[in-house]
Structures are given as C-alpha cells and as structure tokens.
Length: 98
Image (cartoon, rainbow, N blue to C red; front, side):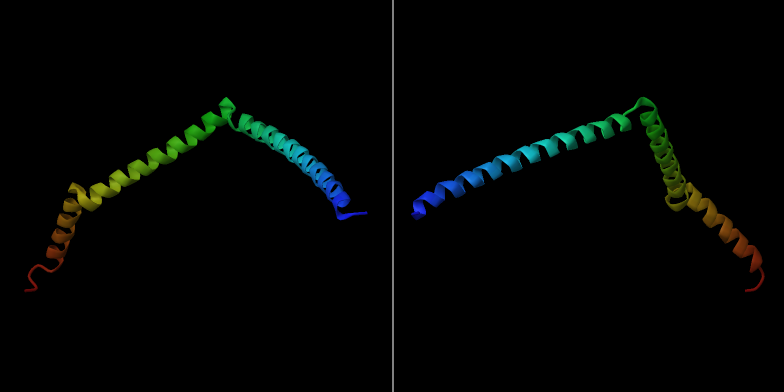
C-alpha cells in the first residue's frame, strides 16, 4: 500500500468523528436549553415573582430608611440636637469646677 491510500481512510475517519461529535454536542445543547427553559419557567411563576418583589422591596425600603435616619443624625439637624444635648449634659456635670 502506498501512503496515498491511507490518507483518505484517515480523512474519512476524522470526518465521521467530526459529525458524531457535532451531533452529540447539538443534542447536549438542546438538553441544556430545555433545562434552562424549565428553570426560567419555574423562577418566573407569578407567585414566585411576587414573593421576590416583596422581599427585595422590603429590603430596599428598609435600607433607604436606615440611610435617611443615619444621614439625619450624621449630617443633619439630628447631629446638632445630639451635640447640644451632649454639650448641655457635660456643662451641667462640670459646672462650677472652673
């Protein structure tokens, strides 16, 4: 046998493997797509979405309120009130100790 007769056999074998692998990958992708669609359908059920929206909305509202209260006492009038109360208390404790 010459080396030329072996080349087409190898080429045919590689081509067959390529088609087998491509078919297997295509089937696997189709299965993954189906699984992904199932997961999305389950996640997007109206009762699941409502539960998630309620949970996220509550968390974000609570966080916004916490930030607003914190900012009031850190940067706003609440800081001035606390500063004045502390100053008054310290002054009354140490009054007459000059």
